[in-house]
Length: 213
Image (tube, rainbow, N blue to C red; front, top):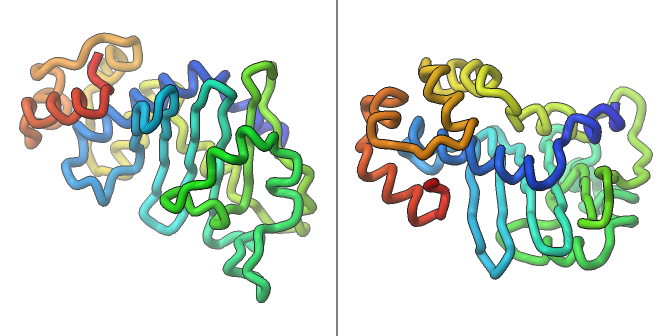
């Protein structure tokens, strides 16, 4: 199962692009930031970016991109690996043990809540594949990585299917596909995807987050 999760992740350049695309589409589809499934912060520090998946049910996936590499911290609140499921309230043994310090240090921010974690995946810029710590997971238990990584939609079709279920909207596959193909987002495209959104407001937010092409 874990190998499949690692193999499903694209390389960091493609992953970063996908997260920016999904965050852009989310801004179009959802005005209220509290209910946004995907978000992205560009250059919070120089050369540093953060993407987040938040399903609104207490689970999240945070992806940090840096010049040194990328690190993914996931939290499944129902997992037995959660610190909240243990009397000691500690990070489950092995999750962070093998992470290079230069990448682990990226999590040292109060907003990231480093200790709220059930799995960690990372990739140094010199690596050709993703890594995951050697963690003993009790039989019949999940660390949440499988379903949270599934929130990274690698095709326009998958994103549209997700949006229909999560936002109860039916965005145009043709327009979503154009955005996945790096077409600049226009007011016309925004109006097609979500007529209830103010196109200029969306464009301004995309510009402020450096997500606008």
